[in-house]
Image (cartoon, rainbow, N blue to C red; front, top):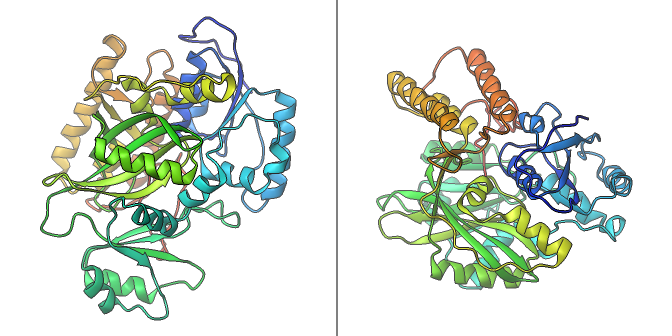
Length: 444
């Protein structure tokens, strides 16, 4: 628990807010935005060593054991904490907190919680359900279906979907498995596909789909359309594209804002209405850079990884959501800045050092260039040039602590390997594949 002095706070009455999470993207962007709006912000983290918790935007850090293996107990403790804190607004930033709230929602009557609705959350947690809904509503999706472990063979899947193909664990999280996120594999060779099929676990459900764009087409690019909706009606939308992302999937480390695509936005409106979405969410897509064709991949019905970019570009989703749920103020679509670039320092350096196949000399030069960009931020006016998710010269501690974590990671690795897969930055939760190797990360 720590008191901190405010920065860039606007005048006006302060609401009491609890933000649940601890990452340096969605969580940190949310606490900074709400604090700057005039709110008094407390945090409820899962990792008490996370760099984001050092932010000056946080008044105090509340402590509770994590919900994995004790969902009912965690929900009861959270309800007591909310009553004790007299919070005006509660913002869960991850499924690990949203699932217990949904499972025991009777405990939270009377609280203003940013909850997307049961239907939207359940579909966002089930890759097959989202794929099926999108296809039924006419939204473009890659060919795909649930994997039948008893009947499907590696050869049959190759004939049906070709290579590469994508295996996504159907459930992102479940109440019984809150400490492990569903895995994703991009299988590029017959050997990788055969090994995967031989190692299938009976307790896990998989959704298989063709890789988009197909081999021989243009380069694929991740993108997202983020929205604020009320009872299924989209009030605000924002679009971004990934400029740098890992070859085998995972969170993007460089993103850019871009104009809304009216055709894709119309699909998003239909999906939001069918999901009865009530809050903020990000629809993840993948685009063929040559043809411009795009397909829907999944839904994140909570604050998402590229949220700092939206805030910097002029769509302050955490504040808009707060004003809607607490004060009933329906926002109008803002005119946001296009071409705004944001980097995630941890993922950017991690991808560069441990996932990229470029020569070591180029890795070092690129690292120096990124460092130079950060140094220039210290002397530039706010809002100019590329931004960093964690970097704010009025709130430097999260970025400094993140750099320390990256240094410790480098020291542990002891070299700059050319492998595309490796250990995750130590302040982020670790997931492992069945063979014991760290799994690719997800999220925008």
